[in-house]
Length: 161
Image (tube, rainbow, N blue to C red):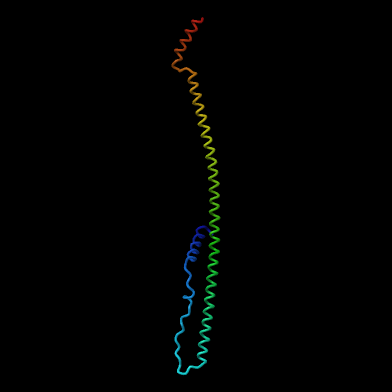
């Protein structure tokens, strides 16, 4: 079954399960027998036939009630089994999605840690380069000072020589 079809069937099952079961005692109860008119001279045969007919009717009614209860029980059990199997499928699907997402999460977390390390290393390198640049600036002469220092060197060369 596809997920939407499974969802629709699951919803229908839930509606069936949540509907209250009819009361078997009120739904299938026999109406009281109509009052019988007695003849002026009742016979034993008529009374016995009526008693036998009522007893058979009650017996058949009890059997029908038992059969209805048994069918309802079997239907409820089958619906419960179907519902359980659908819930198992949903649980397995959710677990698979969690597994996939957690793998992705841990992979991205590892990549983030790696990136954090690269950023820290880059910051250290940039700090080191800044220090080197300061040292180079301290050890070297400004470009504007070059002509003046060239004159001073020439003066020193004349004094030595």
